[in-house]
Length: 88
Image 1: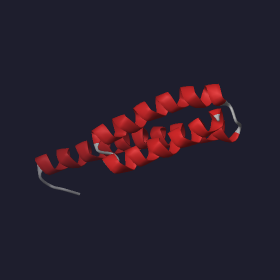
Image 2: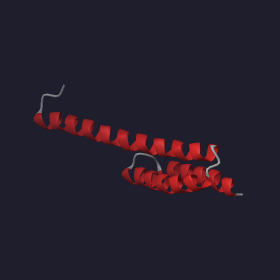
Image 3: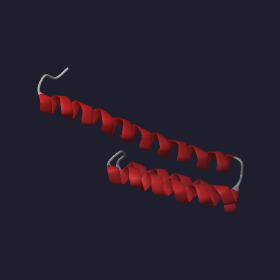
Image 4: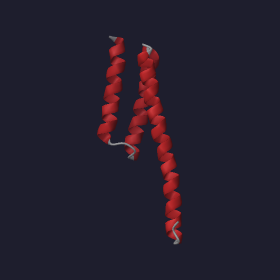
């Protein structure tokens, strides 16, 4: 453990931020799985609604730097393609 007061504070802040980031990232992943579940069940209406929420979560994660921009765009494109495939 750190001895210097500022280092102790930095460790606490890092731990707090890490838990917040883990929570946001986990929430995003859960939302992605929700869309995939609706696609699997051929539920078009719920899939489209869930896709809108998921897109927002992914954008927020990119904005916070939790995931890379290209990763976010890839996830959104993949999910959108799956949901659009249901309507056809």
